[in-house]
Amino acid sequence: MEATRQFYTKAYTQSFLDNREHLESEAEYISGIKEQIGAFVKRYSLDKGAVLDIGSGGGYLQDMVQN
Image (cartoon, rainbow, N blue to C red):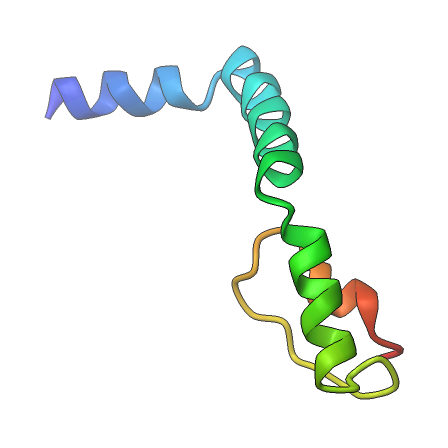
């Protein structure tokens, strides 16, 4: 139990959270996720549609449609 507590205490320190944001940003760039979602929106003509964006990370799909 103590090892678990120590892990989460360390995992959620400010320095970890700051580094996590950097890593997420780098992963977005490397993966090309925004471009992939943009291509998906264009392919299925969703740009004027409404979507419910659940669990896609930064909410990129929601950002690419009107609703």
